[in-house]
Length: 277
Ligand SMILES: O=C(O)c1cc(=O)[nH]c(=O)n1[C@@H]1O[C@H](COP(=O)(O)O)[C@@H](O)[C@H]1O
Image (cartoon, rainbow, N blue to C red):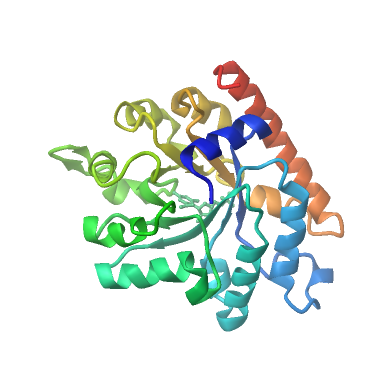
């Protein structure tokens, strides 16, 4: 489990704010792994081994595991337990429900004695409000990552609606920041929305932003850094498919490392340019 300060230290030490997304699809992993007892875990293990020194976070997306029932859940548990202790380990679950249900989701992903998993952070939808988010915050030291402005095309359907406190996504960030500090709350902002970052930094100056959408979705790392970086970096940039499926041959782990290294090197330059390191 990483605190705000420890996360910043890791970023400075590794010169990276890369989050490797483990959206592991059994149909896309190399054929030679498929006979393995737990192919999804075996794939993840090799990706983790190949990238751990280049990234500061991992983000398994729960859908990719839940889709395979009990076997998938076991792959997720195995992956969770294999993740390094010095990375921020995020479960991308996008949950949100009334308090007693959220409490069970929190237990699922945060309480190892109950479920076998103890992720450090979870993605949460804010739509049901304060009582749907506080059960996650009840777990000391764990992070809640609230969907604010997503990378999806459909973000325009609701997130840009006008409220009496700006666009809906702006109202979400302002309100959620009254529930907890920047040491517990992050927001998801898509890399495809880089022009909004300057605005967001006015009312979320210290929060880390989890930024998916570089790589396969076409967002620009340079633009994200230009508008979104704060004095401590304040960004975790996720790439999933562009890293983990860089090759589907025997060399998939080396190819993933090469892609992660490219991003890490760009990140080091951006950190230097901004004076973070
Ligand atoms: O919460 C997320 O992580 C998320 C939010 C968002 O706005 N857009 C988005 O793509 N994501 C997730 O980030 C990952 C992006 O994967 P790639 O497009 O393959 O890099 C997927 O796991 C998505 O579910």
